[in-house]
Amino acid sequence: MKLSRWGLRLLQILVAVFLIALWHFGATVSVGGWYLFPKFFFSTPGDVALRVWTLFADGTVKIVTCQETIDLRRLLVVSDPCFGKTVWQHLLITLTEGLLAFAIGAVSGVALGFWFARNPLLSAIFDPYIKMLNALPRVVLAPIFMLWLGLGIWSKVALGVTLVFFIVFFNVYQGVKEVSPVILANARMLGMNQRQLFVHVYWPSALSWMFSSLHTSVGFAIIGAVVGEYLGSAAGLGYLIQQAEGTFDTTGVFAGMVILAVFVLLIDWLVTSIENRLLVWRPTGAAARI
Amino acid sequence: MNDEPLDRPTPARSAAANAIDFRNVTVAFALPDGSRYQAVAATNLSVGAREFVAIVGPTGCGKSTLLNVAAGLLLPSAGDTLILGAPLAGLNQSAGYLLQQDALMPWKTARDNIAIGLEVGGTPRREALPRAELWLKKVGLAAFGDRYPHQLSGGQKKRVGLAQVLIRDPKILLMDEPFGPLDAQTRQIMGNLLLDLWAADRKAVLFITHDLEEAIALADRVLIMSAGPEASIIGDYSIDLGRPRDAAEIRLLPRFHALHKAIWTQLRDEVLKAYAGAAA
Image (cartoon, rainbow over all chains, first blue to last red; front, side, top):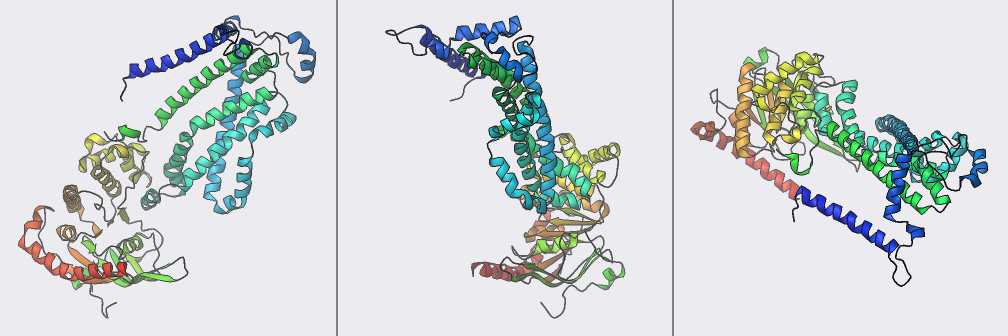
């Protein structure tokens, strides 16, 4: 069945309406004293929306049981967790961590991917180590990074880098290795030297592979930042969620998740528009032949 | 291999340096099991300046191998390769090579794909682009300069490929079944386009095909290659059809039929041998 654009949008919205309604009534309407979604564990959509609204309208994040934990936290973090930071600042910090992680991971991934692909000996020697590092669940590195780099943004950036690096590295490696031999032979017969081959053949090919993984790697950069914040920090969206969770503030957890989801959606949309601009030469499904 | 080469250069041709000269060129590959596969055995071949030579042979006979030797992409295991009278070392910089497969850079527009032919030689981009525009017109793609390869048909891609090679003005044109993947009508149109472009300055052309009719329609001389392994040139036919030719209409001439019949008689045996070899 083929749907019109607006028909599709309508159905998409209906799904959201249905799920939110289910959540709302499950949390507020009791059936014989039982709730499908008890408020304590699930909050309600209204409360979550209100919390998101106050977070942005009010600016400053308030943590309910701050007074009780503040002394302990003062020992751990440099900045005071309870005062001063608006939700915008938390967002900005997560965004900064994500962007730094992506930039460092992508640049090092491209450079090393190229180097390894053009050096079969090098890649043969390091192959088992690369595979080993890639197989390692990166979350276990988070405590190490915190020991090394402290609880500021750099431990989160480091975690993000380890996630982004391998995605970009393997894609660029593959991209350089799998340059069509026909295109390569043709380029060489056109008289291209090594530098020209790099600029006109290897680089665009590797870049196209890197961009095909752009959504994944940007997503992982944000995951690295949020997980890092969650495990120990003084700022950022992951920190907000962790704080709320620590005080059984379900509404706060859900509000943080909603903000995070919208934030990631916006970034994904941005990546898509960058991709469409840069990969205009690539065939896209049915539009391949005009 | 025959006792004496069949393609001894005629006196008229040997006066000036030939564009391509193969002297006892042998090509062997090492197989994975350690044995040697001799694809081409002691082959002599010459392409004169301004001459259009086509090589026809059964599939897998090593036609493309010969072309790769002429391009300098493959080193023969024995024998000499002379290009414009001088021994070939490294890639053949005097030759333009049109491959059978699609070899355009998919990330460049048709215009940029053509211009790159000049740019690699050091021509500044602002000079290369207008000349690429000119070549787009010559190959009938004036309105398609901004298209990417995936937005072009098979025939249009071949046109871009042809322009990409010819914009560099090579002295020798090597073509490896360039129109092989195209449909019959497009092949004839492309054949005529090639003849038109070639007539302008008559580069030396070595044209590989499995299609005897195409070879006769286009070439001055048709060489027959034997079935591999140890393939070599076993027939050399002069095509005494006038020029300019129409690649489609020339097929109706009685002389075309006579040539076709004479060459096919010899080619058929090789094709059958190739099939028998493949079946064994």
